[in-house]
Structures are given as structure tokens and as C-alpha cells.
Image (cartoon, rainbow over all chains, first blue to last red; front, side):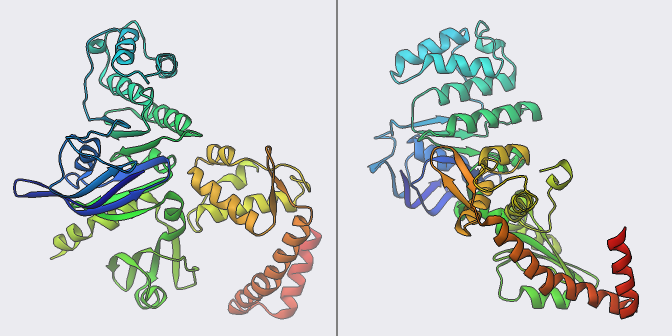
Length: 285
Length: 125
């Protein structure tokens, strides 16, 4: 179990995490979304004990986590992490020597599935392949909590698909908690079980992925009718053109009528509405 | 589920569309009483939707007593499911579909007699 209680992290004058609290008590795959600089990497670094919180407490399985007590159950894969320049087979063996719970046969199996050549040296691999190897090492680490920061950055769509298939396969039926940050929403929208959205160091949303399907929708039609139909609902953004209006909603669904249509938003549009609103209004002014 | 009905649209939440697909298969007899239905991972793979969304659909159908859990094998169609669904769908047909249809006909100036004639003809087709 992971718990952040009122965590603030300052880098000089910059506040990367701002009184942030979250409680993750179910295993599964978590999708961590946020704009650049929203605090995704900081959240992972704090959880891995790479940096210390300025204020507040972080616990992993009930024990305080920080640079002085780096949680053993956490494996953090940074963006662009590198490994020793060994043949993959040797790299996995070396990993097993420093980490007794590392599962070499499992890593070799994953490497085959990813079509990684175990006789190749790490530096001879392509950019995407290196990222795959980093993730394979994380998955075979035997750790309960895996933090993957932008694992699919620079992947082509086919690799992304294979990557998420494998990630969900190795998560299914396991007790692992996997937190994946990304800007590429397409595949993870269909894979992750829960969603964390952060913005400017604050938690904006923490919910089941199924709730997006159910509660995130848009209503378009004649302004007065849309206003009347959505009054009292949680409106996350609004666009007007002529006598017409589109409102993005995160709330109970309403039924379409003759005067307005109702359609699902999808995670990408929902995310943009949710965290992009101040930017939008800024542009309008 | 045939290819045609498998296309998802955006008007309704995906989990509701999955519910309707399974209901349609029960009504049409594709899944008989006590037969196993498609599994959650299969739904998520086939329609390329999030597994939690598929799970949500299965959860709702279970709560409504349309399907039940067969220990160790999967979800199966409840014996009275087909009757129950037909009743629900007929009720919806009389309460919503028919009034909407008549209202639309009135709006475009189709008389009652014409309407009856049109219905008879389309039934005979």
C-alpha cells in the first residue's frame, strides 16, 4: 500500500508537489497523467526515495519512505535510464546477483516476447529496445511496486501495443502495483485499471478507468437547451459558437434530446478539458 | 456478436453498449439458459476496450440477475433471463419507441390511416 499525506516538494522556489495526498491500496495498473511539469516524475522520485519530501509523509506498506529509508518493494525506471553495456543474458544474470528476487528465466521469456536479442550488447540496441530492456528488468525484479516513467516514449505504435499487452499480461493475477506515466493516451486508456491525473503538483482526479466511460461526456446543441440540461452538473469546459454550445461534463449521464446531442468524450479529450482550461481561457482573453 | 453490431459508437457509454450486445445475444438465443457467455478478457480484446469497462458491464448484468457466476468456469445466462429481457424490451417498446414513432409521423403530417398502411406493408415485406 502506498500513501502520500500532505506531501509538498519544493525545488528552490519551484513547488513540484503541492500538499499532495493519495492512498493506493489495491494492486493493478495505474495510469498517471499530467502535463509537462505537472509533477509526475517528482511523484515517482519521492515514492522511490530518490528525493526527500519538503513537507508531509510518504509510506510504502506502512513504512516511511525517503532517501534514508528507500523502500525495497519499489522499482523505479526513469526516462532514458541506462544499463551496463553487457549482452542481455549477462545483464539479467548481473541483475540477479544484486537482487536476489530477480527472476532470470522470466526476464529471458519477456525478452523473447519482445523479440530482444539476448546476445546483443545493451548499447547496440535501438532506443525503443533499450526502453524495453529497462522495463523487462523492472518486471522481472520481483518488486511489488513498479514505477515506469514514460516507458513508451519514442516507441512506434506496434511496439506500444506489444508493450501494453505484455504489461497487462504480467499484471493480471499478480499483486503488483504498476504506475505508468505517459503522454500517449491511446493504448493505456484501454489497459490501465485506475487513473491518476495531476496538475501543478496537485491531485485533480483519482478514479477507476471505467468511470471515464460512464461519466465523461460532451453535450452539444442550442445554448439555452444545453445550459438548462447541464445546470447543476460538474462542467469541466465550455465552448460557444453562434447560438450553439458544447459543454464537457464529468458527472451522471444525461439523455440526448432533439435540442442537444450527447456523446462520450474519451480520455484524451477529457484530459485536455480538465487540465487545459486555464490555458484556454488565457488564450481567449 | 456479429461484426456489424460490434462497432461501438459514442452516443452511449461503452459499458452500456456491451450490456446491450450481450442482451441481444441472449434474446436471439445465441446464448441459451445456463450457457457460458463471453469472458471479460475476451470482450476487452474483441472490442478493444478497457477491462474495467467490460467488468462493469458484467457487474451490472449480474446485479440485475441476467447472468450468474458459475464457479470456476465463468458467467452463465440465468434460466429466466430471456423472458425477463423480452419483458423489459417490450415495455420499453410500448413506452418509448411507439410514442416517439407516432410523434415523428405526426410532425411530418402522416395521417393515422397512412401510418397503419405503412406498418402493414413493412410487416409483409
